[in-house]
Length: 326
Image (cartoon, rainbow, N blue to C red; front, side, top):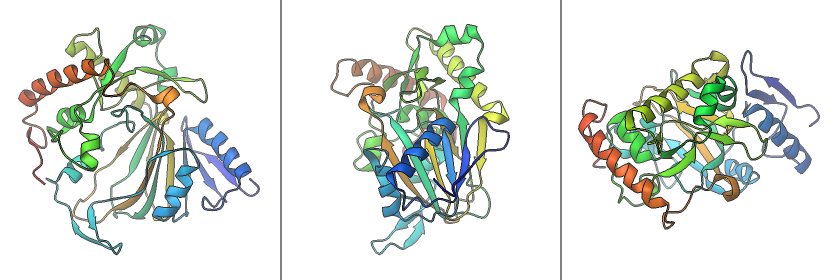
C-alpha cells in the first residue's frame, strides 16, 4: 500500500488511523494488507472517505456476506427521494433502541450468527456529543488475574436484546413486531462463552456486553455480578478505551469478535446521520444455534424468567417498564 500511513492510536492498546487510502478503489493486494492491519489493531479509523450508502455496502461486501449494507442510521425519517424530515420522538422504538446502544455491547450476539465486522460512516453529526466509543476485549482478558481466567474459562452467558433493553432502560419491546424490530426483539436468547478465541488470530478475549445475562450454573445475583465486574474491568483502563469524535467523512471499522462499542448521548432534537454496514460472522465460529434447535428452548426459558423479574424492578428506569406504541 504505497503512500498509506498507519498511525497507532496514542497511548491505546488497540486501534489505528489509516490515511493515504481510498476505500472505494482498493486492489485485492491492498485490501489483503488492510485486513492484516485490521486483525492486528482491532479497529481502524479512515478520515475523509465520504462514503455513500452504496459505497459502504460495496466495501463491507469485501469482508463477506452482509447482515445489512448502507443502512441509514439517522434520527430522522428518510424520504423516498433521499431527503430527511421529521426527527423521531424519544418514545419511538427506533429512538429507544438508539438510546439502548449507548451501553457497551457487541453486535448481533442476540442472533443465531453473531457479526464479525461493523462499519460506520459519518454524513451529518451534531456539534456536541454523539461520539462512538470502543473498548478492547482482548487486552481486557490479558490483564485478568489467573484465578479469574480459570473461573470463567468454562462459563457461558445467554444474549438477548429483549433482556438488555429491559435491564438498561426499562424498555420492553414487542416480540411480535414485523420488520427491523422483529429481527432484533424476537424473544430468543443465545448462549455464548465468556471467553472467545478469535477465529483469525487464535487469541482469546472476553466476550461480554449489555446483552449478556443468566450464566448457567450460577445464581442470578452471582451471574449479574460477574458479568458486570468483567465489563467494568475492560473499560476501567484508559488504554483499553477509545472515544471517537466524528467528523463528516470519517469511516470507522471494528472487529465485533474483539471490540466492544457504544454510542454517546447528544441533543436528540438535532440531526445525526451515520451510514451503517455490518458483516455477518462465519457460521463455523459465530453460530450459537438456531431457534428450531433443541438447545434454543433453554434460552427462551431463561429470558422469560429474567424478563418477569425485570418487569417488577425496572419501573424507575428511563422508559418505566413500558412498550413503545409507535
